[in-house]
Length: 169
Image 1 (tube, rainbow, N blue to C red):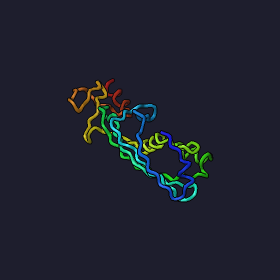
Image 2 (image 1 turned 135 degrees about the vertical axis):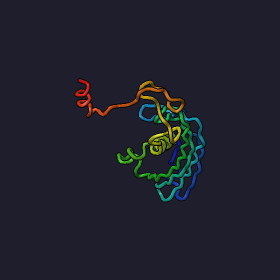
Image 3 (image 1 turned 60 degrees about the vertical axis):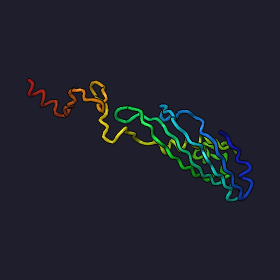
Image 4 (image 1 turned 90 degrees about the vertical axis):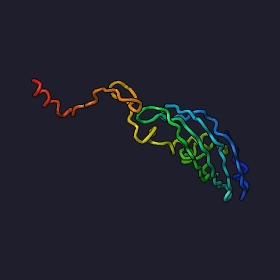
């Protein structure tokens, strides 16, 4: 959703509360899509601190479905995001601001881009379905959490291959 910031930048001491929804149905990370299962409302508070300066605070909660890093079973991961930014009118349109504030174009705030940036920053590095997840078998691909497959998973040290060849000759 686009929100016009002109009034809030020009009115000293003005406080505006905004409640909206996060529109996207999926989160795209490194060309992979993760569905959003649940979403709370996005609540923002915009406060003019001085002429041309606005302080943005907000929060949103989402639940994304991310595959387990070991067995690939889908895991519902809650994301509680706290937003806090300082926007300056004189930075809008400058090259420095283009990198930092990709969610502000002209005097319009793109709330979806703002939340998307926060999701990217707070995205978990690795998700596990449980702490003792055994993963999948590297030979047959069976989920080892469900049952053992009996495959020989011994991987010899490649540095010892020369010795093995000597004893097998």
